[in-house]
Image 1 (cartoon, rainbow, N blue to C red):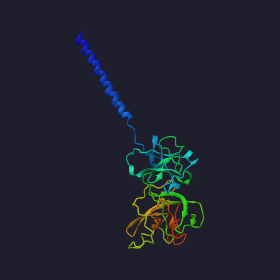
Image 2 (cartoon, rainbow, N blue to C red):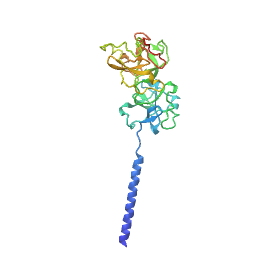
Image 3 (tube, rainbow, N blue to C red):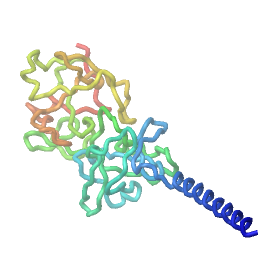
Image 4 (cartoon, helix red, strand yellow):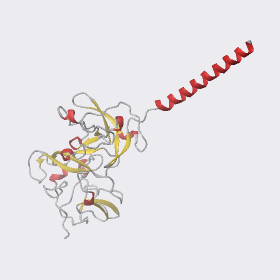
Length: 282
């Protein structure tokens, strides 16, 4: 009798252990969290997403790396912040950082661009904030160019408007993915660089914007068909509406710097945006 009771108790104990182990295994599988920041598929392509797969955004006026969306703007565009976010496949931890905003709050950045949510995005994958005001862009990992919105200030210290006249007010213009201003050269022709010398002796002053042969992601507010590449003095140069694109050396790779707009006089090296005319063929 005792033997039978012992066997029954042993079988019951074993059954409990098996159930407990299976329960632990199930809990382990369901408790594993996803990364804080990950790439997500949307109707406008692959974007960087935060909590719950919600799309993150860049703001063109933040080109200098500061966070200019404040006050009531933050009601519509809440800050994304995570001190040490876990990073998903296809993203690099070194591209993310933290800034302290003017209001004292902290905000996560990607390649120097502060990250925001859009309040009207209810579900994962929503991209309702893209193109809002012509200055909001979904956050993508591999933009070839970006949009900036800033007061143009020339090398002469004067303020300029997009039409190359002296004046105040933000202008929208193209930059590279980390906010360095891009310029056109007024004497250039359609898809033809007439500035850079074969020996590259003048390239340090107005460096060619070199890129890969294939044009990558472009902000949705722009027409990707307006971009192409040419070969100039052995380098692959990006063009926009036929205008070969350049940096200005004395901008010193500073985000949002626009010193070139006044050199040697306004209109010779303008910034460009969607309102720029197509480069002339001759």
